[in-house]
Length: 120
Image 1 (tube, rainbow, N blue to C red):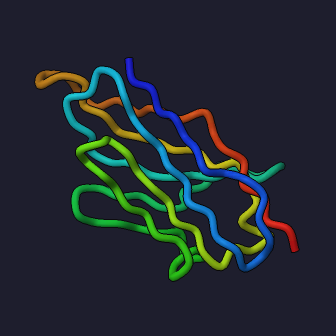
Image 2 (image 1 turned 180 degrees about the horizontal axis):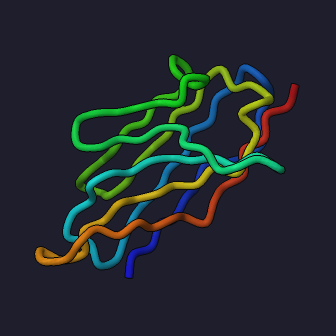
């Protein structure tokens, strides 16, 4: 099995910054992609940022404010969030697309979520 453990959420004023971390552990041969999603109350879960190989992609509304990075040696992905806005308030979830063995397919795993609250 694979576990994803997130940390770094909290309460911050508008304009502030937070850094989320997500560490993957367990039966991991390689990780194809790691990303961050978020879900606000009453809304669907949406992709915020993803890193695959050497490429990154962002939701339009966070471009220029959020930065995703990855430490492959630690199987960890980070999300640096700057210039936070009240509309960024949500539960943030980490997702990893994992290859568990040299002969297995890929599997998607989710973290437990971490609350980010931005006050106006």
